[in-house]
Length: 164
Image 1 (cartoon, rainbow, N blue to C red):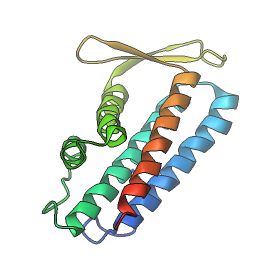
Image 2: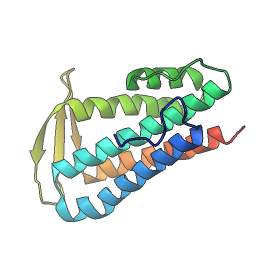
Image 3: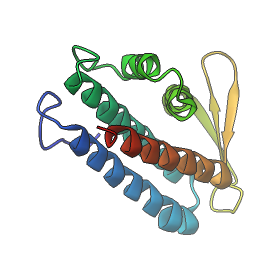
Image 4: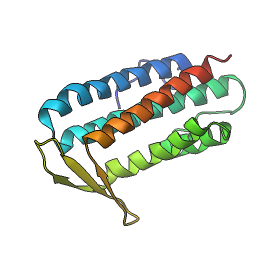
């Protein structure tokens, strides 16, 4: 995770949203350029890491916003707790709720053992073997869908924190 300019206690929701947008730009570049020409599992894994960072900053933006509004006392430090707390704050928002679950899945994927298949080809595939016995296959098309979901989440975060 890139170093922040300010500590989380001093961070404004707009700062966290800005950091999220920067991470999303990096993920977009990785999809549009790096993955197009390199087509390796390492690039897919890097994109997933960028998406995790993007969502984490988005969750921070929502949590900091809610701390400022007095809805919560503090922003949790652990990523899993950030997702749980955000789901509690936005139980009626399907985009936020689903993205919290998606965030936790991406974290499991990035920590899992994985296999590589068809590297340097159009159908490069990363197969992550999760702790619960499930396997998740991630291709260029799937990681692009993950990017679109993350982008939609950031739009929702922006909308929610601007409704002051």
